[in-house]
Image: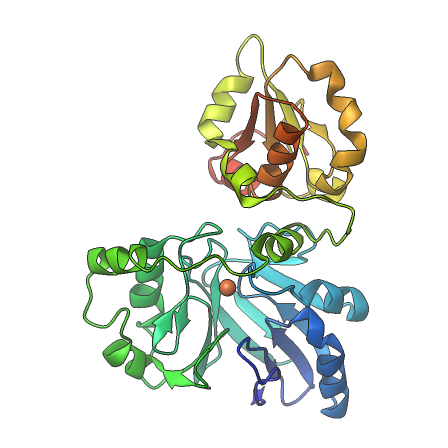
Length: 346
Ligand SMILES: [Fe+2]
């Protein structure tokens, strides 16, 4: 496998790995603003872009992954808990990603987000925002969970050989690389701390929200780049009532079932995860223009559904804003519904 210097030369990191025999390359965490740079670099280095992976749904910058996929036809890879609809390959703990004759291993390392993965490439691991150099990524929004993060770092990343190099998705202090052994011994957030101590420490940090978080996060979650789409803000999203898959199953089994509104794209509706029988489909990007179609159901509660429960939370908040009061969200979406082995139609 061939490795190259980090491509952004800034606080957000984009890495490229390539097969030395075939020149097939994979980009990790590309920024939208640097797409031209990446394409120029690949051409200059005589590499073919075979795959693009986002280590998680980013909240601090627009991803370049969607456009690179659209421009080059490269595979678009994310963890199966990733909400975005345009992903072509969903990955899971233990999977292998191949490009040419090279391959890397997938470690599911949730905690910063539920869909966070680390990419283990022999002598090094790309840790996304789960483990940073002398730090750890935030765990206080977008489905973050400090306890899970502790388990991911200590159970999965610290299980790698001590000499494994660490390349995170961000660094704010000018570091470029570390090692598993170094982080294990000296990382001030996690070295020598119990799970409980780590969770308490993370809860005490009280960071401000990143600038423009919703403007960045919602397009990255939904792949909708339409300027006219008015996304709800955080306060509206936090008001959305979440129902577990089992709760939704119970409700749709009653005499007067709620309306189930699926807001995925039509290819997902008929795809591998299937859909809930009796649900109606209005993709999130079309919802504001087609909301009249819900008028006949105004008296009924509405349960909104998508892949991972993120786009549907957005849709539910939009419906609240339009005066629909009894709106609920299927928490963790059809991914969780399938994991619970609840019935689907395809
Ligand atoms: Fe992040």
